[in-house]
Figure 1 (cartoon, rainbow, N blue to C red):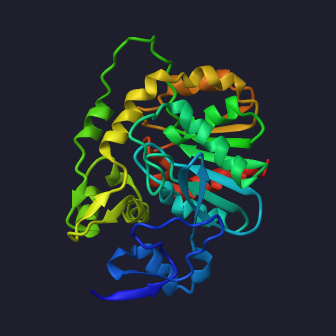
Figure 2 (cartoon, rainbow, N blue to C red; figure 1 turned 135 degrees about the horizontal axis):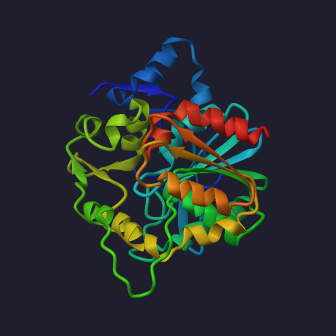
Length: 328
């Protein structure tokens, strides 16, 4: 296999523990893993050093949380992915913001290279994790940008740990009223997660399979590659395996009704931008209107022609909206 020395992607292999200042400065990856977008940028004279990603981690109560980091100067931006994904799916948005911001995109518990306990995936815990991570990093005046369940984690962190987040961008957040204790609810997302295919012959075969199926077929190609590159690990038999176990993803979906995101909104006393996918079934217009009525300081943007996966479909537009919001 031909290999090419580049400064674009982190190595798609498991890493050992690294401290908060670790830096991946020279990375070797198979050339076929590079997206057309990245190769075109190099051909057009883009500076590779602008695209270096750092890898760091924080350890809290003996639990390790991995994160990706871009940029060394400017105000801090925290990016939080949705259920089943990882921090590197923010890559194109984070790289754009990194020109004048310090950006970190965490792997939430159960995802990517972060801790994966067998249980305990209640949604309130994800909000607590953000608080502890930001406190450990000693970050202040933070803009938090989250998608789906990651946006919900930001809501819970801002509501119950006031002061650590300065402003929030919530992209198609998962907001549902909690169910009474003892009421059972079958979540089709959890059922699908338990049946998810975990092992593939190669990243290339996984890419071609995902490219034509929901929800990935509407994603921009470089974002799908980013998901596959850091969402899988190499196995000893030469195959690749998803890092987020389907059983953990299913637990998270099952626990959604046990946390009332709407109830937390009035406590989020910071500027908030909500971005909704026009055709998103996860955050319909009625939910958006209710969220706007409950938040003290909020503006709403609906992205035409998008689904629940707005950051994956329109990353450049999301970067523009985030920049505009932060400038106010």
